Image 1: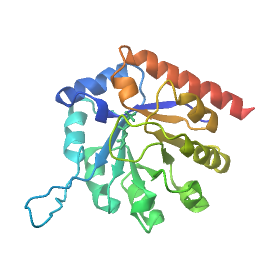
Image 2: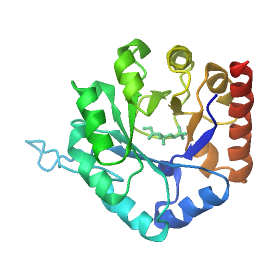
Image 3: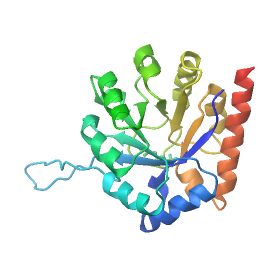
Image 4: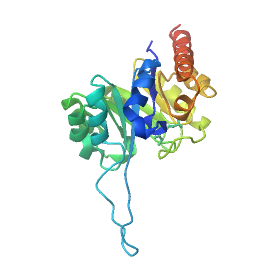
Length: 234
Ligand SMILES: O=C(CO)[C@@H](O)[C@H](O)COP(=O)(O)O
C-alpha cells in the first residue's frame, strides 16, 4: 500500500506571489509542489525560427522559491526535449524529484542513473498517446515514480482524458509499491477513477489553486486516494 501525496501544480498559481502560493499549499496540507517546465520556443525573425535554450519555471525560479522555503519538495516535471540537459541545473537548484518524458529519450536507464547520481528521485512520464507497456519492467523498477499524463502536456485547465486511466491500472498491477502520479484535469470530479485505478500521487492545478478552500480539496483528494489504497491492499 502506498500513501497519498498531493502535489499542487504551481502553473495555476499567482506567479507574482509564488513563494506565498507555495506556502499556502503546504499549509493547506500538500506534501509536494509540482513545477511543470515547458520548453520556450521564440520566433525571433519572420524568416527564421530560433529556439532559445531555456525553459519556463526552471532552475532560477526553483532557486528563488527555495531561499524562502528550503525544505520544499519540488516535483519537477520536465516537459522538454533532451531532458538530460537540465539534470544538473535542477539538482543545483534543489529539485527533489526530476521527472522526464519517456518519449524524449532513447536511454531512460542512463538518465535515471544520472538523476540518482545527483541525489534526486527519478520520475518517468508518459503522454496520452504512449502506452503504459512502453514503460519496461526495468525502467519501472529503477524509477521512483511513474507519471501518467491525463491531458496532453502543455497547459493547465484542460479536460481530463478518461482513456488514460487504464494505463494507471496496468502500471499499478506491475508496480504495487511504486509512486504513480496522474497529472492533468484532476480534481474532485475526476479523482475517483484515478484513485480506484491505483494512482497515489495527485497533481492538480486549477482544481486546487482556484478553489475557495484549497485545504478542503487537498484533504478530499487525499482521503479518496487513501480509501482506494486500503481497498486495493485487501
Ligand atoms: O503542466 C501541466 C500540463 O502541461 C499540468 O501540471 C497542469 O498544470 C495541470 O493543471 P490542471 O489540469 O490540474 O489545471
